[in-house]
Image (tube, rainbow, N blue to C red; front, side, top):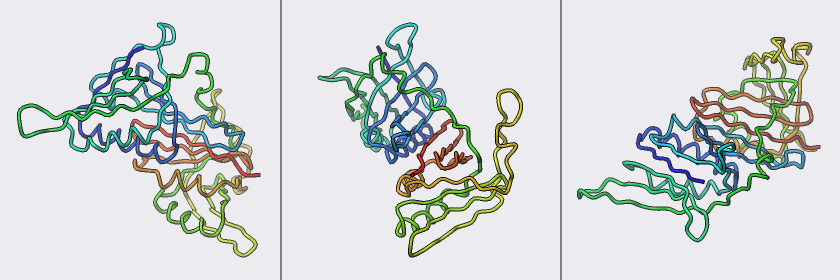
Length: 284
């Protein structure tokens, strides 16, 4: 099992760093899945048990100058590691104006992702700062726990308003309640609602637009028979929503959410070559 990669382009490095920072804001530990052409950061807390789920996908060709890996076996050419994204984020902080960053799977007392940051120096020799990030190697028999989550059969899918705006609204609401209701319809309307015994606050967004989802057989999915005015809603933990909004360091080109009434809110944030899916289960 081998892995080594190298980033030399400063734009790619900054983009990669922002992505890792975003993930570090969302979870303490996650699974890094390496394949020949992609990297995945996965959090598979069982959403059914009230945990959030995350699936972040990056095309390695858009970030790395070199990327070599050999998986656990020829027919399973993948590597699954457990790591703390915060540690990786810290290592990348030292790489702000680096000439190159190399990442390698090593074994130093325990398996590590070794991040070597080559910094510019005044003399002809370069300075290299090395970080060893401990990782756990996940055995093949557990890989099935980290499958890509199935996009739930949602009632409504809607584009999100500007995330900064949404964040400042949710930030103010969190002082009033621990939970928030997100509701939306197929007319492009979305409401964020707080209801407590003392106060009820609603923010309305209009004309957000609804993404065109086509089902595999060419027909539209179950949303087609739905009355466009009728709202689908889910009440979720306000802190989990804020964590997602506050953690955003990449400004997504597209952000949308799918609501499965009373069950789950599924967020999808797309940015050039990174896609982040985030699942927040509804509260009873």
